[in-house]
Length: 132
Image 1 (cartoon, one colour):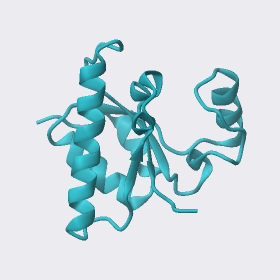
Image 2 (cartoon, one colour):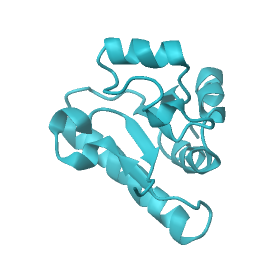
Image 3 (cartoon, helix red, strand yellow):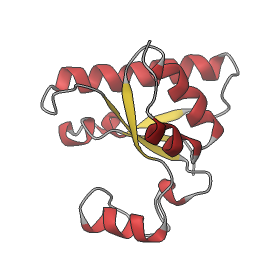
């Protein structure tokens, strides 16, 4: 059974309880790594400068405390294997929907790949859906 590394555990602890519950369930079936939960001001600006985020501080959901967003990558994924990225995103979304329907989590989940852009599909960003 897969389990998160210490670094992944530390990143996930900075996230909203619903994200912690969802990705704890994901990790039981799919070996993955949490690369980012909460981002400080400096981390957010660096992510913007490097093109890993389209937002300045404090506009990203990663800047909330607890973080309303998390970046997660399955282990051993080929960056260009779009079928695997879509499978992973769909798996996470399906599991999150089931946990929502069962009352385990109180928010729906959004995946960056749902926007139909192949480049965003392999971007491992998930966030709690907050209707405007």
